[in-house]
Amino acid sequence: EVKIPANCKGWVAGNRGSELRRMEQVSGTYMFMALDERGDERLLIFGVNKGTRSGQGGRLHAERLVKDLIEEKLLKAAAD
Image 1 (cartoon, rainbow, N blue to C red):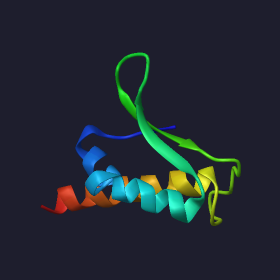
Image 2: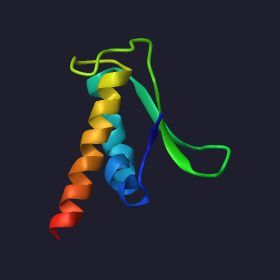
Image 3: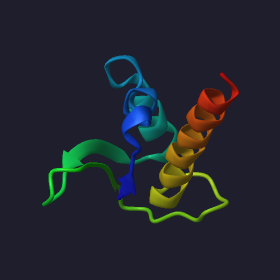
């Protein structure tokens, strides 16, 4: 599970979910946005392979890809 800042949701999802689908393909996972018990949106990452933080494939790889996209968006916003 990854918390996505409100100003990054569209960036992480991409046009019609294209970024999520790309990250799923690269990491071998399935991801979707869902509401938690407080009504806050979060990204859920599912997959058989846990993976590693530095390796390719698996849930931890998908989490790293998502966090990299968030960082990219936040840096871009700070530069503007």
